[in-house]
Length: 108
Image (cartoon, rainbow, N blue to C red):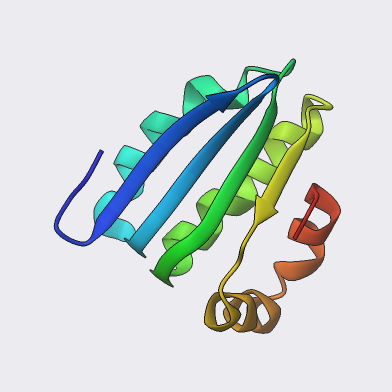
């Protein structure tokens, strides 16, 4: 899935699904991200990992979606990781208070 400023790519590995998010994760692409995430949240036998290496920007809508993923996976006792968080995004996560929840999720 791709728009002019956002990319989402899924890669399946043995026992793991990795979502690579790139560009700007904002209100404009929220519906697309939710649609891509819905079936993956239910796959409790697979580790779900978000790779944010190429993420340039995230707004409050994107942060809300991340929180909902953390909650949904936790409720299902399913593994969830966030990896390769860029420094500027990590600072935003720290300022908004989401960092502890992502750290609990896995390899944050």
